[in-house]
Image (cartoon, rainbow, N blue to C red):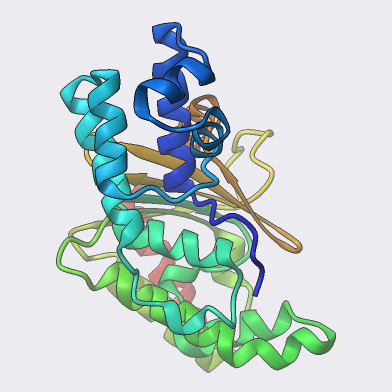
Length: 285
């Protein structure tokens, strides 16, 4: 396994916030390092999210910086979550560290918003549908990892959707994903039935973007927005690409994608009409 620094979204958020607090206070790395009894290089690694922090060490930094209570609590919460396991460590040899970090964020999320085009979102996939999608996306030696990837996806679903404090889940799915048959008609029928049943859950909002909708021309691909805490103490945007996922964490990026999601949501069918369309497609299978 790689020995690269254990950077995660939580550590990077803590680091960015500590750097902002230090800069706003007018401290150099050297000056702040003396204050918290660390070298400037060590503090720099912390601010980049490339160094683990014990809770007592973070509390010491926050106390020395005299950080206001709301931010103090938020950063301590993120640090505590960072030290917890999301229950998926068995997949450490199967998937990337980034994938495990994303699963950990999902496991703590208070809200997950997904906009999908070509497939049913992974958190809502049945086992048979997920198997078909995963196998279709693998080539060469990667195909031998299909079973491991499938097990990881199903475990993520279980950990995220069936915990006592399950997140609010907002899903916008393109009509094309509902009509594209994957794995055969029986698999597709079961998948759409599963999606329809889950759309009635209190914490789930499902909207369909029909073919006739003239959605925003800059909506060019799927994305997922995660929020931890209410109000959010950490927000991130996940974008799939051919070899992995980008994690966007800057406030400006998150704000942009939240605005994009809101725009698409206004264009898509409401939840009742979305269920009607799902039922109509189901009846055609």
